[in-house]
Amino acid sequence: MTRSSNKNRLLAVAGACAAAMTIDLAMEGPIRMTVTRAASAQTPQSHPYVGMWVTEDGHVRHNLLPNGRYDEARGSRESAYRGRYRVTGDHIDYWDDTGFTADGTFIDGVLHHGRMVLYRRE
Image 1 (cartoon, rainbow, N blue to C red):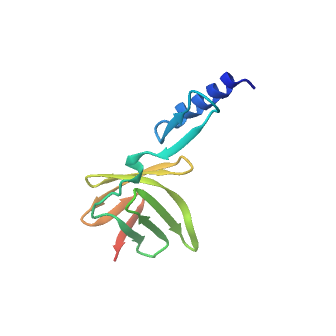
Image 2 (cartoon, rainbow, N blue to C red; image 1 turned 120 degrees about the horizontal axis):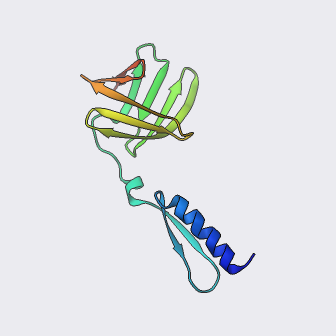
């Protein structure tokens, strides 16, 4: 493969990943790629909904982490689903790492997510 085609492949990968990372390609010498996390991905979220949310029977548990990630357990299956989330007002959007999306609403200190009702566990 030529140097030019290698650089084009790296540029294509960089374009696909641009929203999640920054790319630095050296113009002379060997092709080099440095990947760093975007600053927004490292900024912790600070809001009253961070923490553990559990259904009344304890079967479903959502741990909303301060870094904008969540970890959902179901029954004895820890980390059944993981992904990122965003809270806007009292609305929450979830993006599972597999591509599944969901949402919910916080009403009077209770999380309504699909047909589930989750309560804050202190």
